[in-house]
Amino acid sequence: MIELLTPAEMAEADRLTIAAGTPGIELMETAGRAVADVVARSPLGARIAIACGPGNNGGDGFVAARILAGRGYRVQLGLLGGLDRLKGDAALAAAAWRGEVVSLAELDFHGSGVIVDALFGAGLDREIGGEAARAIETINRSGARIVAVDLPSGIQGETGQVLGVAVRATETVTFFRAKPGHVLMPGRVHVGRLTVADIGIRETVLERIAPKAALNRPEAWLPSLPVLKVDGHKYDRGHAVVVSGGMTQTGAARLAAHAALRSGAGLVTLASPPDALAVNAAHLTAVMLKRMDGADGLAALLSDRRLNAVGLGPGLGAIEVARPLVEAALASPAAVVLDADGLSAFKAEPQQLFARIAGRPAPVVMTPHDGEFARLFPDLAALPGKLDRARQAAARSGAVVLLKGADTTVADPFGRAMIADNAPPYLATAGSGDTLAGIILGLVAEGMPAFEAAGAAVWLHGEAGAVLGRGLIAEDLADALPRVFTRLFV
Image 1 (cartoon, rainbow, N blue to C red):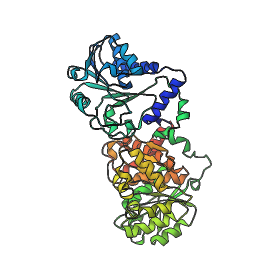
Image 2: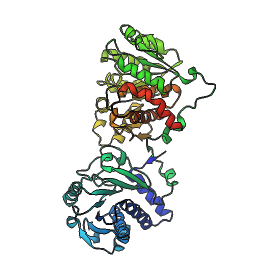
Image 3: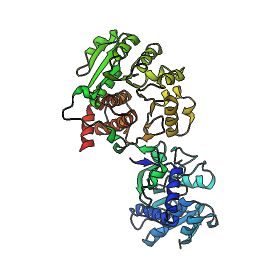
Image 4: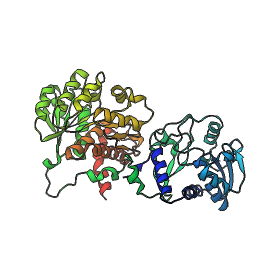
């Protein structure tokens, strides 16, 4: 698993490392050298401006300045505040710098080929103003290659939010582990190319810190993906049900059903209201079709325990139609994936939805976009951090919550979370979310735990989009999954 550490968790990793016998200045020296190595990708003749802040981030900048000057680069260093404000390891690093120190206001950003942003790190928790804000605005206008130390100044390390103004870096060098702010929007667009440098912190500190957030990569969920047996049977891989809307609203459910079959379910049935049977029958091949007469019909269908997962929401219809169907699904023993209309059906009484989720033995996955999230969790929608929003929503609802976006975040009621960064912009197309819901459904039906299934589905969905490229439509996504699975296992 590729852990993501909050600023507080990273500070604890530093503290544990120092307590174990590694001097803090040694960590700073290694961090500054890692920054210098990235900066040194520029030609030797490049002029380098290094903007240092009053904390340890500035100390890293002083180390990088000394190393780069020793390699023959022309380095100018500017400091926010006076040298007398530097404390501890940052003061030691500054004392080892033999070059000139100018004020931040005097630093020549426009005459530099490379700018090193060592003003503020991931622990910043207040809005930037005054001289620092003016410097950041000048840096962003400079046209230079910008290398940020730890995190672009002005980006909050836990939420990725901009604190007033923020550096837009070309590259960012962070240490030991990335932070949520590196991958959450809008922080991710400020980070540029990310390098995670080893500075000598041992992996064993993670056992003490026990982080609960991870970057969404196969390492986080692949061990939970069911292994197919040579003598296996389609009935071993689960039977998923997707609930269709009425005659004029059938396409979204078919997209989800097709994706459920592609992603792993052994069998998939589309439960169709009577008026949509002919429309659905004309479009289905491997997906089976069953008549469903309202909520009672769905309840009767799901009373067969072999049908172990049900997805509903895409194209489900108005509240008076959708809500009874969701209630019937939640009263069944099947795992439930709720999307779109299945969520909006409870916008006036979200507690009624959460009460039906509470205590049911089978899992529920909810897949809201920001608008649907705000209708179910109006107070949480105002929180600045997407990771915090998803976690609190999962704890309140009792469901695994998948909060969509370029930085789709999956959280479970126990605080575990995964943040994705592999979704290409091509996925912003009609029906893409319906396909995602179907991928989750297929993985859950196959036997994958809900949290891991949701994380896997997000990653697979993103990779399928990358395989297809610009011009994809939702109908293409599920059919790209075999190529993604093949790459995954090669």
